[in-house]
Length: 235
Image: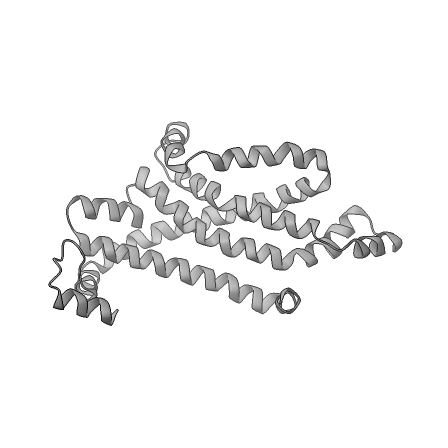
């Protein structure tokens, strides 16, 4: 930040190109309420999309690992959803779902859930064969095998997917706000750059970076607090 400030001052970079950190901070203090309101809107979209990715990814991964036939059926559909550019899909979702928050949540979900499904499925499939055999010797049913053997073993993989998914949720929310929104940090960036309020756009970018870092660290803390044994086993 100091190097950025010094470079802008010494090189006399115009504020409409790259504003100095001091100019960005001054803009934030002047528009604190505006930026805070857009931040809350983006956070809501991020968390809703992330929650949807968790709710759908876990049972979907369980279905994928249950039989090879289902895996071969579902995987191509998952790849198809990821091959469609989300910016191109957003206007179609607006037509289908309306100009409310739902299209933004769906875009966020579509961006976040794919790596989470892959991570969970990899963890569930990666259980050593001797553990599965031990469970069967102990007469464990399919449900007990899933809950007591596969899911605990997959915890490090699940949290790796969650870390990727929460970061991608921020990306997905901003992409959705670029296309269809009347609030949010992505909307603020578009409107600010349209009116050459570059300092405001940079402030929104910095806030987005902070959101991504904070949410990532929240996932890390949850893993350390509730599943410390998973960290030791993964290392």
